[in-house]
Image 1 (tube, rainbow, N blue to C red):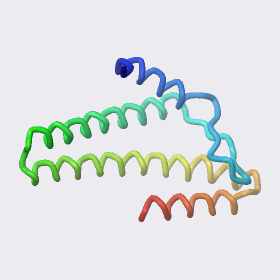
Image 2 (image 1 turned 90 degrees about the horizontal axis):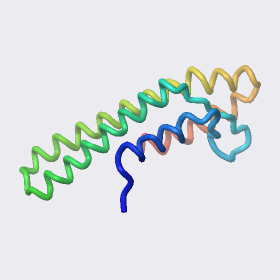
Image 3 (image 1 turned 45 degrees about the vertical axis):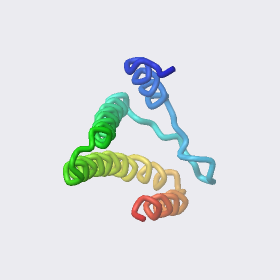
Image 4 (image 1 turned 180 degrees about the vertical axis):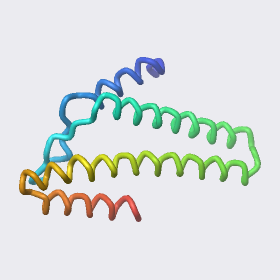
Length: 121
């Protein structure tokens, strides 16, 4: 049984707006803090993307023309890329800056390089 949309959205917001987030268990991991506003914006964008993906699924079920489906998939990819850019921008301005102040920038830069390598494949 699925949760109602408002309950799952509330849970996602609670999870994203906790006071600190760890980037992982690697050496040099640091708490990552999303402002409540930033988390809300990301959740809203991701919720819209979920809706678009459901729309693509419906288009396939309805046997819509392939070019129409591909156009919608391109829109979803663009929306995901915008979310990634927001997260990258926040990481560069907040996390990299904090790592530089704390003296562990090399570790943070290496983690970013590895993440970008996977992201850009």
